[in-house]
Image (cartoon, rainbow, N blue to C red; front, side, top):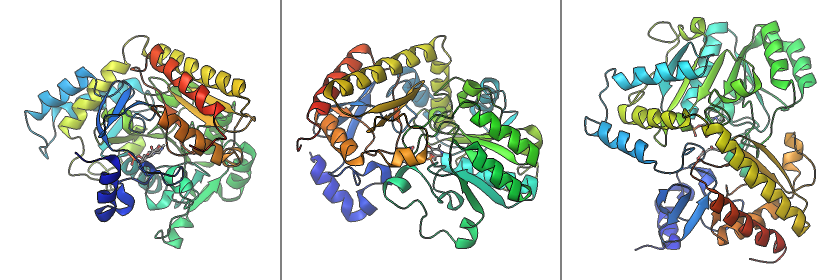
Length: 429
Ligand SMILES: Cc1ncc(COP(=O)(O)O)c(C=O)c1O
Ligand SMILES: NCC(=O)CCC(=O)O
């Protein structure tokens, strides 16, 4: 058997940074990542047999916990009939029906293989539909690793200090304009200047890639109105929030209707899946019904559809989100209480199934505030929790996720760990 350390040394030889996605490396928090052997419910077990209560859930997909029996069963059953056909299959039709039923703004939907593919296709479509070239995104928002999005990007790009990635042609990056999140006046000013050149505004309706920042009251509706006024398409990137914060996503929670939406994570139930969809008149411009090209060898893959549909069946059960929200409140109220008790300046944000931890006494609503928090304190807290068997995202710029599989004992154990980690925050671990 290999230890975590041995595996990481081996991984470093043939995988850049030893990981297949940068956010998994412990680069900003320090130390080495552990290697997961298996996962069940609320837990991960590493190759050395240590158990962690997991608050990442594979970065969002595992909303029903790891390896739910019905999802596993659906995957195994479907796989027996073949892994990929390269022809239409019935499950992708059921998936489209399900997504369009659960998210009213989806009149048509196209399946892809990742969130990145979904957002890349959505902006190509927006450009094709409007015949405009500029797009607007928000500082600290992350929409996957497509060239157009690696401009003031969040998530690993922010964590690693490369929000504007080398390798993105300047001419392309110049077409991506950025705005501060939660500042409607800044949007008004920019739209007044160049609104008629902009194909779309893409936003995480709840920003989950610069920690977790909720939209101010009226902000999303304000953007909706501005977009309508300037003929700009509004794209909600719900790769993270879709089927997490409510059955109909953030658009249902805030009652704002985008023109296009992107999804990923939960709709694949742990398999590689993404989707984009929205207004029929726009979606009909996609090949082969229209001229905007987008394709995929494995898109609509039957096994991935089976995992996603089985997961959606779980979240559709009555009371699923009420219960998830209750657990989110229990956890976050508890974290705030133990931090206060330990005298640590700390604040939280939360919505259903998703939360942010900030080492500041301010309530955080902006990118500036999120990046001004005490990051070294977060890093020490992360390691304090890890040592006590609780796995948080290894970055101060990622949202936390809780699943339906976390029970009150898991939350109580997390709070015991947090109380001790907060009290020992200024000791060396
Ligand atoms: C909001 C958002 N959009 C897009 C993506 C990209 O998705 P993927 O990693 O599946 O390419 C992510 C996460 O990675 C995300 O959080
Ligand atoms: N919030 C960041 C992600 O979800 C990204 C996961 C990854 O890139 O591995």
